[in-house]
Structures are given as C-alpha cells and as structure tokens.
Image (cartoon, rainbow, N blue to C red; front, side, top):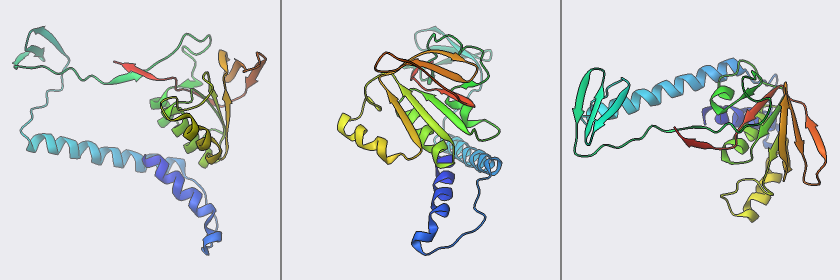
Length: 215
C-alpha cells in the first residue's frame, strides 16, 4: 500500500497540468520509494508490538511445536493454555509450470516487493486480487504489464460485471483471459490463448500470483 501511494503521487504529478499545477522533472525514484516503504513497515510493526505489550501479551520469538492438548514448547520452555490458536499465515502457491522453479526471473509477491529496479516489462500470471493490484502498481510507474488469467474474467471472487468494468479502468495493463500458461522460458511466458493458439509474452520479471495457501 505504501508503494501504491508512491505510484499514485507519481501519476498525479504527471497529470497535474489539467488541474492547473505545473511540475517539471517528475520521475520515480524506486530506491527512495523502497526506503519509504521500509520505514512505514518498521513503524507499523513497532506499533503492533507496542499494542501487544500494553495488552499484556508475551511474545516468544522461537520455533514452537504442540506437545499435547493446550501445551506448546518453544525455546526450551513449555507454555500451557486452555485454548491454542494456530495462525501461521499463508504462502504463495507455485503451480507445476515448467520453467518457474529456481528461475530468478520468476518471483512471488514478496520477491516483487524487494526488486532493486523497476522492470520495463512485467508479466503477471494470475488475475486475482494480488495480481491485479501489482499490475496496476507497475503500470502506473511506467512498465508494460500483461496479466495472464486462466479463467474468463479477472477477480473471480468479485461480481463479474464489476470485474469487467474494472479492467478498462486500469490503464497500461493488457489482460489475456481464458489463457493457460504452459511454460516459462527465461522470462518469456508461453501460453495457450482462448482460441487454442500458442502465444508468448516477453518480460523482464514474471510475477507468480495464482493464489495463496495456508502455511
């Protein structure tokens, strides 16, 4: 969200003349945007830590495992409770597409947030919330973005009519719907389109955004 805010400010600066504001030399400094993001994250993490402390919550930063009902061992200590909540979060799904494993050009959402420089061409595999959000971010920053989605419409959990109206509202992004990715060769995404024709999209970076699963 911090990077999206930076992109929004950049886009507004580029379009400011129509509002009577003239700005010159507008550019995006990706390194500074990343530094701002890191500062925001650090502040938010510290805030959550402070809230936990004020609420009397003890945080144990160790690997833990369940020893039995209501008993958790972590860092050599045993912790007991009437109820134990397992909330380990989620992780990105990596489908068995040839060429994606151990490919430095293919990243998940965490990896894309950490890239050193802006790509000129980004291909997003997956048109869900994460994929569309990242597509809009990098398109606003000037990248050529393609989204390849297996289903006939993006954002499958959204009303289809709303999703269809959203796509034209995301400038700079080309959506390829009803397409099945068959391989990633380097940073080129190969897929079969809705008519059964084989296609290929070149990229500098490929984002794998087909969903998440419980960690």
